[in-house]
Length: 116
Length: 114
Image (cartoon, rainbow over all chains, first blue to last red; front, side, top):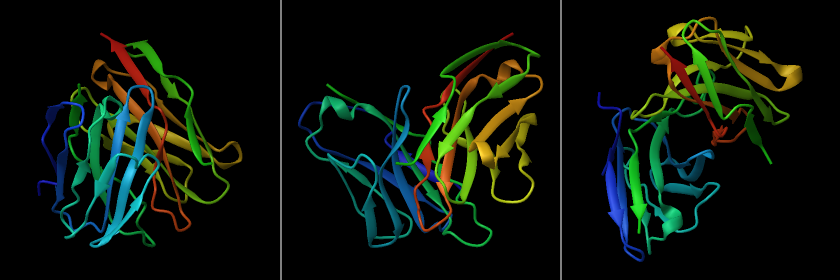
């Protein structure tokens, strides 16, 4: 199993450009998440999804969009990139909540984005 | 609002020293608690978790954590650190009542001197 796969690993954007960060998981997890990690700030939730066709905002959704057309894929789109979006982005997935499921997150390797 | 506080942002230890990283959370209901570790250049991975039962939980690589409900704390410990423990450690909380969101602390960077 590959787990959670993110692409690209690195990207430099100019202000105002758009791009999509790809995320796919092969563990048949219903829940998927996008976090951004900034130094000294921990991880902040951008968007999450509890299943195909269902998405919702997290703590810091402004400037981002997501879609969930399949269980496996959860792309994150940046429209009109801004320097404040310079960060490391992590995609994660987890099993659905249940009696024995603790909600452990499985992370991708991260995508480092710089907006200049 | 729910939050997770990690007491130390940077910790420097010599090999064989004991480690304790503090974590407190603000949420009154039932929670699942986690410590994740991020080694240099790698993604986050689970170190240990508390779900229910024995409040002292053991994880990988000799780490353990104790859940003290009355103090809303979940401190991470290791009796003797190694150089390979150099990493960033994140405490995380997931409310167990209808929420899907895991809330992370700001992280603690641990550097172990050989």
